[in-house]
Amino acid sequence: MSLPRSDTEIAYAKINLALHVRRRRDDGYHDIESLFAFAEDGDELAATVRDDGALTLAIAGPFAAGLDTGPDNLVLQAAKALQNYAGVGIGADIRLTKNLPVASGIGGGSADAAATLRLLGRLWSLDIDMMDIAAALGSDVPACLVSRTLMGTGRGEALDLRTIEGLSGMPLLLVNPGVGLSTAPVFAGWDTIDKGPLDASDLTTIVEDGRNDLYPPAATLVPVIADVVASLSAQPGVKLARMSGSGATCFALFASTEARDAAAESMPPVWWTMATRIRSA
Figure 1 (cartoon, rainbow, N blue to C red):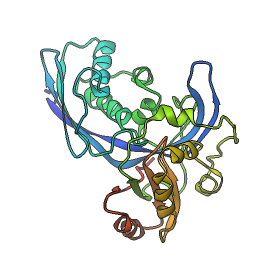
Figure 2: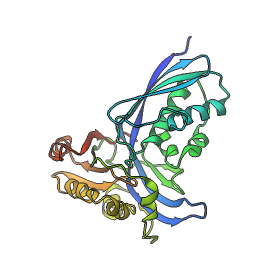
Figure 3: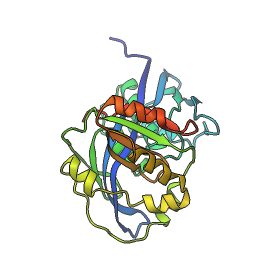
């Protein structure tokens, strides 16, 4: 039976339901405790096999402007790393449709890199563990490779699958105020105070006791983030409103799709929104 020559994959948007920063490590990273969840939607990738071993990248979509299609792009880095690791002589023409804002705390390049590994792993008919490749590409790439609800510790690469009752399929709204925010200055603004561990035993505890320790420095750098969180928190039917990752995208979980959709309609038109659901665990 001949193998498929083309295939597609979704780079699922990542959210941090909670993100507790515990300490700065000697290697420059921070020890974190975070509950990762993923949306059903995100960027989209398509690839076609090349027999000559070459790797190419084209980028389209609403957030394609300014993105580099050269070797520094994480998609091509992931493809090349997988090619080298597996010792394959085939390549691919890859097309990325960038639906998610850049530098926005919802996976971005990490989700794209992880989706590239999944996609090319299928196209190249590879039966290998790609976690080491993912970890070498970035702290969030291993979680994005799995793209299921996970507890992340260490610098985010030590992962434990979690089932949180009531979370799968929950209506989710992503909102970005149209501002990019780099991770490094947000972590640099963390107050260095360990405010305690993350209890991710159930959704109520995550809502009531969880937090995002990067929210204060992010909101200081980009004050409109506080406006987004406040706007989401005030919506009827909201269960949780919080910033994701290092920002500037925020999210809200809702009791119903109707409440989510009404909230999306109420957001200022200059803010980017995506109405979706939590991907099943």
